[in-house]
Image 1 (tube, rainbow, N blue to C red):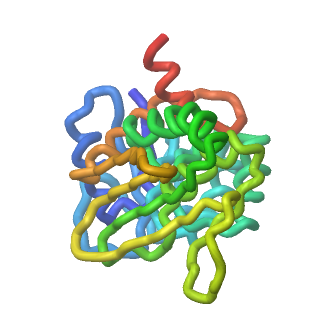
Image 2: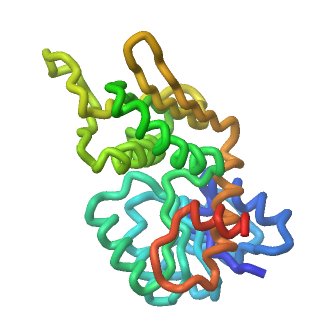
Length: 255
């Protein structure tokens, strides 16, 4: 039985994960952390991670990026692996995350879905063909109107996967409104749309002369992310210090 602390337990994803865990005999939430107390849970809830005194095997984080620094400190101090799902982290926080991973297991993923993480691999193969043939590359993401960060962490992960194949030589362009020039080849355009209740849509466009190839992923429910986070927590519990991602979870499941 994997014992989990749910960091951000009263948010949408926290409550989604709470429901999924309740139906899974191999994992349980032993404590939650959330500044909001408007929901009554079956486990104790603390205002901050510093106050949590419950033993656990892993932490699942779907809280606000402002709480990540204390979370990492707690994870290292208590030696509890953490599945870090919060997006919009600063460069300083990303550096702190990497430092923490030298002392405890940290799994970081901008998107927990199986589909997105498979797409990350497929894009490398596509980039090797299309970029060399002069195709322009654009990433367009769409999310609900309550999402705080833009572009999404997933859009950046998709762009990073492409750029790694290109020796990180391409520039990311988020806004062309101030430009009065033709599109240079070595750039990846990243656009964000916010509206309604869109759960998550990502399109990666390879646009060449006389043909366009588009890779698309649509999430119809947040459950795809919640299920991935639960699987990640089960995998991460007991792992040695280091940085992990969803590809490690997927690979462990296929062995």
